[in-house]
Image (cartoon, rainbow, N blue to C red; front, top):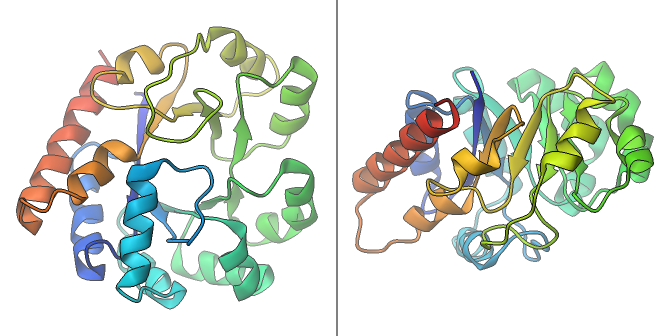
Amino acid sequence: MKHLVAYITTGFPEKSFTVDLALALGENGVDSLELGVPFSDPVADGPVIEKANFLALEKGLRFSDVLDVSEQIAPKVDTLWMGYFNPFYQYGMDALLKKAQEIGVSGMIIPDLPHEEAMAYSTQFNVNAVSNISFVAPTDDDARVKEVVSDAKKFIYLVAYAGITGSGQSEDLQPIITSIKSHTETPVYVGFGVNEKTAKEKVEGADGVIVGSAFVNVLLQDDLGFQQKIEKCCSIAREIKQKINE
């Protein structure tokens, strides 16, 4: 069974909504949930997620709110934190990883922390049984892939193209997937540009997909009520889960 990982922005539109949506997604085909930690300069994210980040921060969301939401979600849905390194560093990585273990958060996805710099924290991640998700891009050569995935935990985040999330670009991912799988048995999940229309194509040869903008787009629709947004996101999740496993 191929996996579906869903990204949602914590605290948008509201904290309680994030909890309700996360739990509903977990009951509608989502295997793991990326709780996005809002940040003022989300360099790897496209305009959709960037806007949600801004609106959550504008409402006063703090990192303590992310912890509170995580405590309510992690016991029921496999939960990871997706965010930029600055908020994590400000909290203190040692204290943060201990907190993650205490809450039950299984991993962290930090797109602006290069592999070489992340190695400085590998012991802390391992001691606290929290996975630091490794990134691989189609532009990485085989030697680079081998280096990055040699100690990869939980899953490998394969960036579907060089760019930002949410755009519709497409690349032939089979060569890079073959390269990754020749060096590790850690599952490979494809992210960036995955939605109901592209999921079946993107997952070919991989073990799962990561979907963000397709869900956050729904959250930004002002003409929908909270329950309608949850129902629409769950419908998208069910459709993608079905398509990647056909």
